[in-house]
Length: 250
Image 1: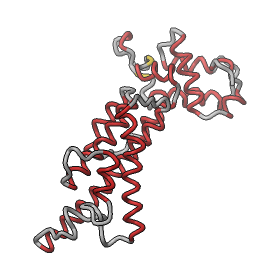
Image 2 (image 1 turned 90 degrees about the horizontal axis):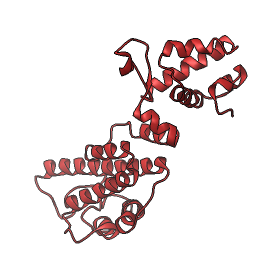
Image 3 (image 1 turned 180 degrees about the vertical axis):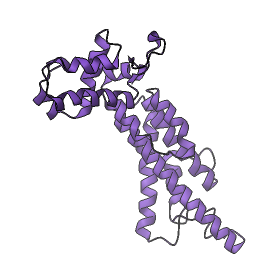
Image 4 (image 1 turned 90 degrees about the vertical axis):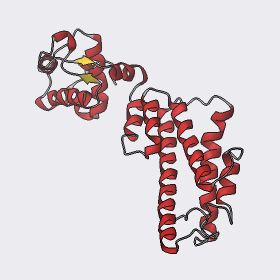
């Protein structure tokens, strides 16, 4: 693919997804004294492009603005309408590509309240710290709900809490489901929380780090659902029996 926006023919523009055209447009805006969105669009009419291809330029600019990679109006223009500038996020995208932008969008959902601060770390580019903090929060929550001592950590905490007869085990589940749930929590903590505790883990791919955070979000919501059900049992019986311990799962 050509490296410059001005090198794209009508056929090439119409064959590319808007995000790829947008990144070429972003590089063009950053490398030229382009300060006006209107001038940018007018430039497309001077390239011998078809009307549909010219619309690709406009769509690319709109895409950049919607992703906060290009801002408007520019400060230098004293607020004059239609002026544009490359934002800090846009500068970062030029260096790292779209992977970090797309990964951040994955976390645009309503994260569990106890993971909200993790989103801020991720958006600052602290991918390893964000992934580790998310799984550590899961570990803390399990310890709280199971009433386990601080000395019990990691995989051992998960297995002790969710094992047969453990405080977070649900006797109403099929035995295979109980084991599966225990292995889910133990595997997640063992894979994504324990290694960063002992050595530097470099998440060069921000998408992977965002998926770890989303996994932590799922585990938190499983704990929420379980805790809510436990409260119903308490309200019905007026007490917590040894069978149900602190709460039920599912």
